[in-house]
Image (cartoon, rainbow over all chains, first blue to last red; front, side):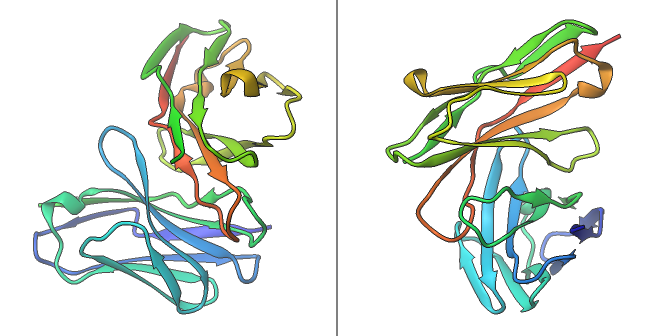
Length: 113
Length: 116
């Protein structure tokens, strides 16, 4: 069966520091991968998605970036965090068929101080 | 543009009560998909159901049931005989069929509190 791992679970970082969140998927190949952010108020916002290695699409312009160095690895990064980057970050995968369900990781709670 | 509205921000019920979570969507497409997800206090989103726009048949899974009505653009979720473990935030989401990946538009969620 497929599993998705996301770490760390919680992170407290000062403003201006770098960020690296990692997500890996097991049990499937060539998944579509996604990064979502859930800010206070519960809304879920799609940040990035990837349909293949090295293929990243950004939904929202910001100081975050994403990379997919391997088929089942998805990384969310920032060179300099802002206070507004605080939130709950969720990685997800889906298979490559149309409108397949997203399966989410456990999330990373990021607090920028 | 697509939009999902969950008008109920928070619902509180007592265990064993039935509860219905409302979801209203907007889309210009004739082909689309609707989803429900559950987010327990631990944080991860758990996929519950997917329904495509051509299948208006209601679905029942244990204590969960879903009522899809295209005429009113609604996809409501009912929990029968609620339990404390049902306490969570529930999200309705919409995906339009136009690309090879799933782009979900989520509603803002409904927090369900089930007390013993």
